[in-house]
Length: 236
Image (tube, rainbow, N blue to C red; front, side, top):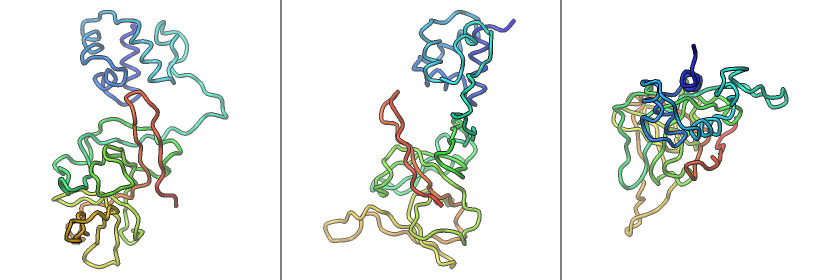
């Protein structure tokens, strides 16, 4: 017979996240839910409220009793297509005077969670974290929504991209004329005392490029349970 804890596990599966990640989302200590699942013990009512609060598309009656539909049915006027994109764990782009590269040992493929992009970022294929100060338009710590570039002939000069080589992964404005090299520029024009740019342009051989992603927007979470401003940076 299905239990309350089984239904909590179903929510995690539906969201594409682990029980540990669900615990983080509701502010519970690590193991609060997983231990209860393992030992088949009860959990405090406040965690049920937190689950419904953080995952509002699930019915509280279904969660508690198992009766009715798991998901709330929105009115047709509010229905939107659910389109999930992966937020990769430990995959970051870097820029700044404390280092220009991110650790590229972690391949795109280690998914932290799946994000419903909805109609915020049409065409988005992935999301990653961004750190550093070389790109003034992207706050350090924000999440970048990306669209994979399949044809480098379609690179739009002056737009921001995440470019990855075997040595680094960076967010820069690109300039490409179809040759053997691509130029990567920072939007932060801060200079040293002698007039040189702190974030100097980078000349990258095209045969060293693993892949390039267009930055189509970013997300900033101001507080742990606060609103998430959504900023579009590109519309085709």
